[in-house]
Length: 262
Image (cartoon, rainbow, N blue to C red; front, side, top):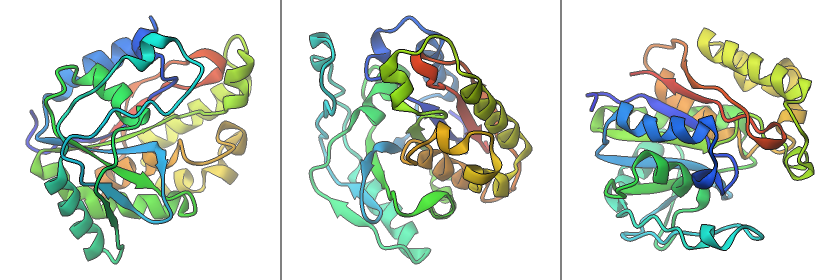
């Protein structure tokens, strides 16, 4: 394991990803081996929204099946990783030091934005994990600041893992649109170029600067984890990120992943 881990953003796709024979699944299976096993994981999932930052103190977080209408086998999956309440308290203290009060939630489990990628990355489920919520009213700049406050965790053996979607328009996914729409490809290309260039201002203002920014993200919850990872990984050197993976799933869902720092 690296002394200082990068912060990472992954696109978790549909809940059925563990059963799908697509490049993104194989990438996530390889990613855990590439990163090594961290001391703990702080996961920022698009599927936990709160009015202000919230962290889970659960010592044995349940596997939350926060979806419906999928094959029964999906509901039989579980990810019995231990919780990381000490990490949650440490993260809350870092946020407090940056002027951000965080709530500590006793019983919050792992939603599929957390356990789906972790099941593929660390299938042995032995690495302690806690979650940090996204704040939908906060926006990209706010989540960038959260990541910068949390950056010291990287040197403490903690993997800061943002889990969302690089392009996430569920209407197109539900319609089962074949191929990759031009607008989705254009946004995905722009995102990759801007990440590698370290163009933080452009990224924060993606809704007006990127091609089809609002179409790629009609709502922001699936892109906000990227900004936490971006902030945590660029707090010290201000350099660009690196592309870990790029591919598309059904309906124009980008499965891109990025690493920052480390």
